[in-house]
Length: 479
Image 1 (cartoon, rainbow, N blue to C red):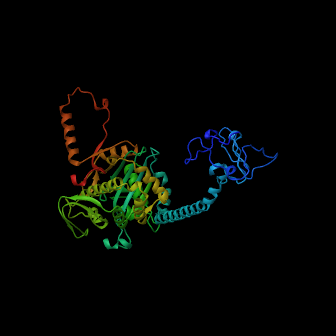
Image 2 (tube, rainbow, N blue to C red; image 1 turned 120 degrees about the horizontal axis):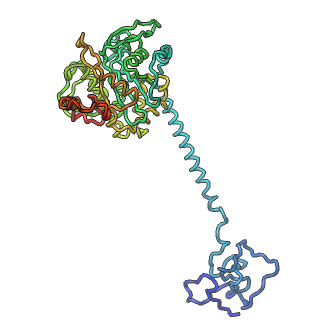
Image 3 (cartoon, rainbow, N blue to C red; image 1 turned 180 degrees about the vertical axis):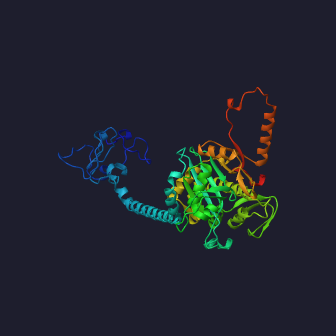
């Protein structure tokens, strides 16, 4: 057998030698090396534990006393190295040794991640409990409503929701700075019936004038006495019998079952406006109202909480001083607030939503069905996809009361038609007052020009009732 063995057997070529030359192995350095190949003794085991190849890609390895041909696979000398220092299987680290060296770091990383998860979960639970604990539950109203359950309307559309929002004008506690405290007495400064459609594609908020003349049923007072049924102005119901009396008065007036209620005081409203960094409005004329503690220039501007409260409460120095005009101003402002929350992603961003919820819950009193953060979150989540142009605000059709122009009465049959639409979860439309007036004039003109033998209106689809109002998509600076 020749001493020269080529690279064709699979031995890695030495870049310092010409192609075809044999690299110098141990057999060439030790005296007595021969060209013959010595057979290993029977049962001999290589010193290293390298796995044996099948021979398909065998390398030429150095034998103990000479060179081997790579026909039988990899063979290693007693020093455990291949010819020319080529890396062999034995030179590779044992399986898993590198992973074991890295595992301590992985363990520390896992422990650190677990610690952060526990801290985050603990902080989240603390925030949840804090917000949840802010809410005051009105159990007395729920108990009284249960007593008069037989008198209450039956729900018509189960998935629709009717929520009564009551703005309290109590001057007790933190609210005493806004007026005289009459021994804790209070009236509903603002009352809004909020109807959420069953498909959650629209929301309609109907303002009920506080001076509206209505039938107030018998109600229980705080000292467990019963008042007499009487015809009086609407906001007296809250003073006489609190929330339950107001709810029953609204249900008698509208025939609509109230599913939930919320009572918010002055400070709660202020804090919510501050939580969204203010709300933008436009004023055609400057305002200087000492009673409302409001002094603002004309033009576009952003109101903070205190200014916003003065703006929605001001009456004598804005417009004609009527409560109706003030309600319209409140509706437009609430629309701007909803628009601000949706356009800035407040409802979709937990970091931005938290201050709003904190402000709202601190001054919020609700029925047991809405007295947890989970309940409120589900309500907000169901509303966050409602398009702003479908969040509508209007005042119940009203006119000056015939016996006292400082009071209001319903305009019929318009009011009854509105209540029927909401009760049956059917759509209503709102447009600005001047646009509504134009539509009514066009309708009257069309009726006058209609031939006597023309078909009746019943042959054509019933149009959606339209009322004077606004939507959350309206720009206050374009009013």
